[in-house]
Image (cartoon, rainbow, N blue to C red):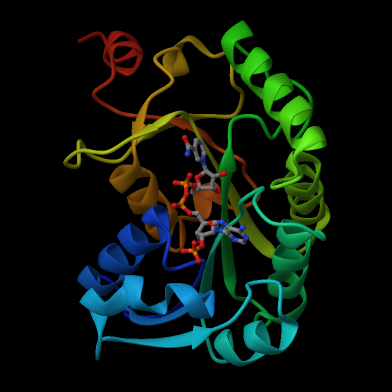
Length: 231
Ligand SMILES: NC(=O)c1ccc[n+]([C@@H]2O[C@H](COP(=O)([O-])OP(=O)(O)OC[C@H]3O[C@@H](n4cnc5c(N)ncnc54)[C@H](OP(=O)(O)O)[C@@H]3O)[C@@H](O)[C@H]2O)c1
């Protein structure tokens, strides 16, 4: 039996967010969403089934109202935006979620919890190009997303940080496989369906094995995951 809980999805209007809304509703959870006011229409498909708090996800007053009474908070951490958007979002959730609430954050493989990840050269190159471009045109801030995750890792809240590989659209293949560190051969395919990333985020709410973990994920039907399973 799946226990119905009240879940807040911060960044609900994005692609990952909307998949999480779908999965959470399918599990019978009560869903509250936070998204930028200009993006509320992206959630029209869920009208009447979720409560929406429009506003910037780093607006502490919006987060305070949205997370009230929630057993779980799923937060999409993105490097987009300016002025410590990711840090402000993570800090607001860490400070304002109910005591004991399960907190699950999303990010990418590029975030390392302990420096033990071994990255493919393509990813290192991609990250350094991104940093260089965003220094010239400051539409995003990777360092801010890193700082947001550092604060989560240092917190004594009941957190999980799910680290996504490269993402693709398509029907679900099942729950992604995860490992503690990028560089593990299981993860070599570096590909996950976004719908399954969202599924793991929602599953993590009730999975204590993921508590205080930063799982790096890969699709369970990818070549590297199948090879590791002997298939
Ligand atoms: N894209 C990838 O290949 C990839 C790979 C690995 C991991 N990830 C991780 O997966 C998660 C979801 O990423 P996604 O790429 O799939 O994106 P997404 O689900 O479409 O979500 C993007 C989010 O960022 C918000 N956003 C966009 N521009 C913004 C701005 N200028 N200021 C503030 N917020 C802004 C969007 O809000 P609105 O709806 O209001 O626009 C939305 O909530 C993230 O945690 C990301 O780090 C992504």
